[in-house]
Length: 258
Image 1: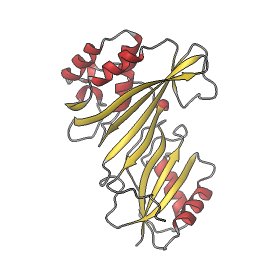
Image 2: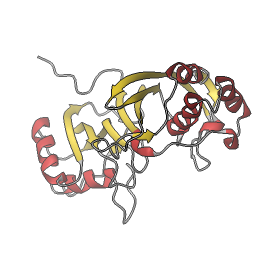
Image 3: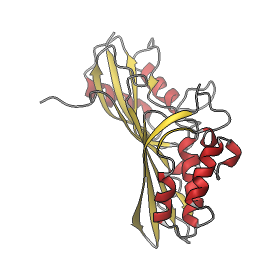
Image 4: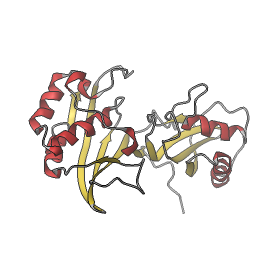
């Protein structure tokens, strides 16, 4: 059976998250329902990561095995037709080798978190950024972020319902940048690792926001990490500023050969 990789973009607000759940509206379920309009007997899709309710994606990746030998562009067009009106788009599709697995062959996941600081409520970006109404110190944000880099036991920064076998992960990048925003400032958190724990990125950002606001020091971040205790974590920020931005593989499944 031909295997296809799908690059997927979605707005997380109407969904309970990526993962299919019986009787609930999920991103995976919406795509699988669209696929059944094309081939009723497919066995479902496998995604690169399970985003939570309210989390968005620019570059989620999934794979699916189908009976028909589809031209990749036609497959993406057909799926996008059947996905309407859900805020989900197949932005690219490609035929891949049978040993490609969206989750298990991934080398790295990249997330972006958008935080806006301004007094007036955001309007155009409501639901796609986290807003706070006080200024933040980007230098302090980055200094706190640097304390989290490397290989650690991240028990403090994972949900109590996380199902991962181990809390040990390697954080390769956590970069904070500052950007102009109308009557305010936007802070973007670029986070990169091979894999993440449940709520790990949101726990990082919520804790670092306290550092940027001056309520915590960077040393407090180190103390929280070393405590290996969920109770030592700062506030967990809301999901709607978080985006799964990219998933990388040994070779790009969507690279076009000319």
